[in-house]
Length: 105
Image (cartoon, rainbow, N blue to C red; front, side):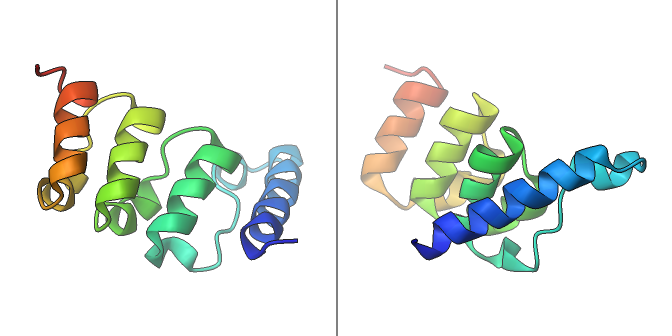
């Protein structure tokens, strides 16, 4: 099993437990164990576990053009202003971001 698969399985398990918990706060975000410093893990946590926005991991995601573009396209389905600086440093992702997110031609 790949490390990311182990992490996903662990967080899915914790998410299920948290949803059963009475405290609404625990149900919103299962424990993430400090991996929010990784754009890869934060993006995959948002898409695989939360199926939505992961505000605690956005700072890490914003430092990587690839994950910022994917986060804007697949999670936010709109602009990801925090990640635009990293995206602007990549010609390829700048083009994709302008075409797919900003809807520029």
